[in-house]
Length: 429
Image (cartoon, rainbow, N blue to C red):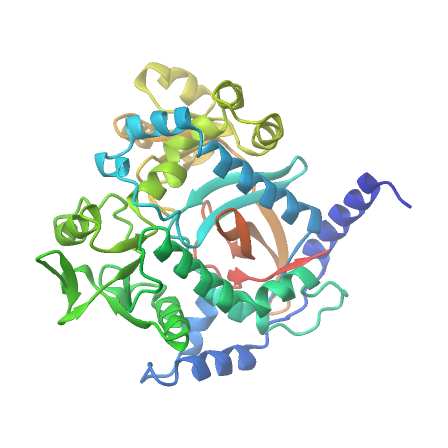
């Protein structure tokens, strides 16, 4: 039997070679479109346009060693173990919004953990509580044709695909039962600002269909449609029991969200993910703790968990004016992100920023994270080979993997404006 390290090295090398040399178009767009139309036939009046789908989905897979997927899963568990430490929570609450002190019980539906892959193994980029794309990615993964390499969906991935809908239903049921004594919610609302204008509205429709197919009345709402009277949250005269929260106002600070905030704090509705979960796991300032394993160990984190975090969480620090000279001097090795930001808004690669932008960063709340280059994927567009960047996202619940997926893009940050880019399936090797 070969030593495991040799197998790992073989898999790493194979994945790298395939990402550079395999140009297979594995997406069966007809099958994907048919699946979407079939699922949404009762809820969508207009057909889904090809341009809409082309922006969302890349036509080629991303190859990732099985060992790297397993390592990312282990890193997720280490992060969530750290987040359970009393002293960690005390520190996080010291900089979190006041609403985060309220803990109604839910632990956060469809968490997203984003990684870059490199020679030192998976490197955590960030954690997201409103991670988009899971419902889209499961359809994408099911609409794949054979590749030139016998490394299509692994047995583990196929098992996840087979039970994805049931796992998601169980997830929402568990989130409900963590706060409510009643067996099941009657009505769930998927809530976002002006949801039909959102880039991920198609995903909202898929989530709605999944839950309705399992007997839960589900609606898609703007917060302005909510009413809160006498301890009951309603929309259009119907009681709302649970909210699948897609707002990026993570602390419900917007005046338009005051009724939702009141209902949440009074326990009149189950919200997932909620402000507490975001504060504990997704606030970018938390990366300063997760990359400080010595402190985490002194707070009670186990040695194994600490070792995984030490290897995988890039050193992160709060940007202060006192450190301005050093930050500017070392900016090429840094990536700057707003503490309260989301997605790619307001983020800057240090090697690209101007002095003017840097001065603006100093006046706002930012972290500086050690820059980790993205994985690269070679693809063909109109028979011309070009290179794209890749990050890997794990969709999880309670530390357990629901689905791995990739995003293919060009530029400083992930986006859906890149020709040939978009969500891509992960083929494990």
